[in-house]
Length: 553
Image (cartoon, rainbow, N blue to C red; front, side):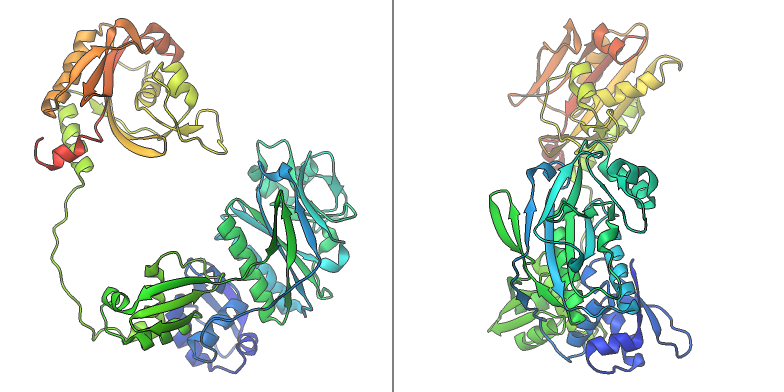
């Protein structure tokens, strides 16, 4: 969990009044944090926040939260955004690299060493947490007075542009930055596989940033900086916008004035940042039932205002306005949690709680899988567990199985892991390939999930490798499983190139093909680099799970 370091006097200055240390030590943990011990009477303090509250990852965010929680200024803090003529153009070339881009300006900021340290700290905390170490989003903060709008976000070839990166004095091209700069070495994996890299330039062609790697030295923020330009790039619009809003409002807590930027993204034109709140409605009665205590709607409203939300009620209905920085509010239950937090967990204990006795049990598909494992072990098979990741080449081209719609991996690390598997058979063939030097016969099985067109299915697959395999042998095993499942089925000859012609069969149930079995063709065996005959069966058991739960099996 992220640890925020700050100065006690600085926190009180941002809150607007002096709050006793003892009270802070009591109240800060109540909003979802662990207050680290502070030795003696020193003013340096540390707080470890829960990961669901990135809006509190700075002393400025903490001050805003405590003003509301301590009833100094309850309700949502509103920030004015003044219009500017700054324009930003997003080129289509970045759509395949790092498509989401949001910016803002902040004016008249008084930056001292403590503030600069806090700014760098919140930026890094956001990178590590919601930014997933810059893979999901990356933030750049620049001295606006050193560059000239309009700005352009585009993708360029690595050798086409040079600039001086932050903390360096020599111009490098983008490839050189990835090879020589410590940040380039640390984050170059985020750009692997791309022939063009994203870059942010101003009207003169000067480079502000090479996201998600490093900013340019030209726009380095110092204690002399007065006006800032902020950029956030990434893949998830919600979190890119959220990170920008958190940073802008933190700077506004320091007295900065937030300025809007006119964004041109293809045919779309919009203003950034957009600090508009989102509206929710909840039932006070439902909320109290969820918490197990009885509160009047007015107290529900007061509790929400202590959490920095605006709220009013009309009878049982509570209307809530949630600031754009609260990325954790995704469901009405999250608002219920804020009611509990704002009311005070220390006050719980005297409410009425219903006790309901429940009996746990396996899900139908899990129970069916457990029963089938016993059957397969009883038939002499050894269970294996393989990766859910596979490749389209092995799933369809090498196996000869019908091509389905796989879920593809966006940025695969290797050519062996380009999609989620749609069959178990290729995974088991990989096991046999790695064990072809072992004693025969080899009888293995797996019961596991496959993913077809984003939907998860449960399959069972059995496979045998030895020198005298036959269609009759695998037919007997497949029908043994089907018989034990008491499944009604029929068979028809398979035309899959997976099997030797005339030695493969499809399993039909309720008019649908649910599986197949047979002798693998020599081509499939040799393509998987196996040196002995192989027989197999694979059955989709997903739809049968409900019959199992009804006690048929």
